[in-house]
Length: 85
Image (cartoon, rainbow, N blue to C red):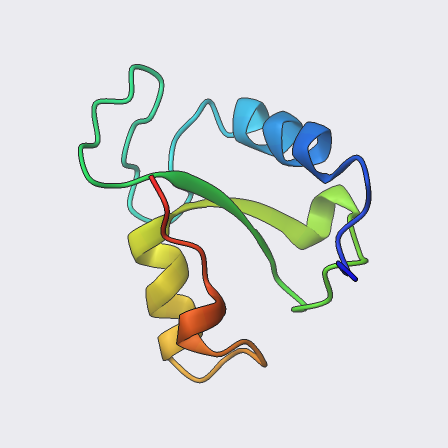
């Protein structure tokens, strides 16, 4: 059973639009899918997938998202992060 809400795709899309389709960390631009080999994802700052308050969500490219999780700041294992393009 997923911990993400049924409307997660809609929420994530809204966060990406608010970020102007750019990574909030490195600035990679995904408006025209110009960042080859990467994708834009939405990260929960408090690591709680059920907490979809806008202030808890940030748009990150998959590289910055993975760096955050590899930094030991998460309860998610590296293999659990989806890097599908």
